[in-house]
Length: 247
Image 1 (tube, rainbow, N blue to C red):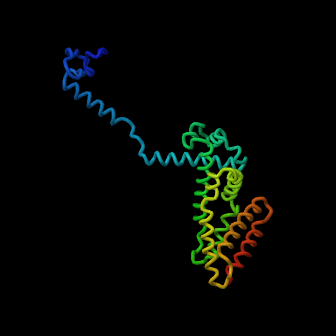
Image 2: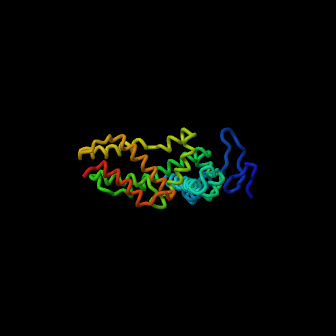
Image 3: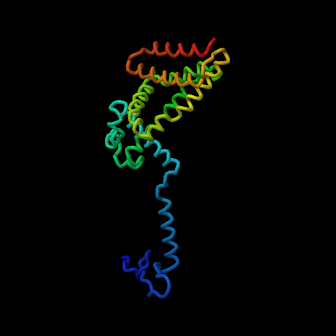
């Protein structure tokens, strides 16, 4: 039986000689020391390997998106005021501690969920807009249609953004994210309109871009509320595009 007092060999249990100066001996011989080393090495090899760091990062991103999508669903159906940490955790199927681990608090969660929504919308738009870039009118029409709730993903995004709008009016940090890339998009729209001037239009590209963007947002709201039909909405867009892009 192994001697737990520390006076026996850790491997075979043989009694050790009295300790002298220096470090206390724990093995009776070099053979026992070598065997113990081999046992430790084999034990280490038999342990399950840790997942690669990249896999851990991917899993964390997937979990953050899962939680953000829960925020979107709550905002789209019940409003952003209902998106408490507990409600978000329940909707996402995780614990409150998991939500806190990934986002810290509610404000950080709302801000990050909005950033992810913007990125998601941009990616979807890039997939949908496949128009030839040499046709500025068609490209501009495709951009403006992204502001319209023409399918379920865009209808959900519209409702979520509408829920965020009221919060952005009283939260400067949230407002910055809410208006993310708005000016860049307006400048790109102005560039497309400027190309139309070579065809005889005397429009001010920047002012027309501001008007078209605001018009598209308003039309999207009307379409979501059922105030206009899809056909009527497209008719309004085409009217303004025909005015700018003279053929």
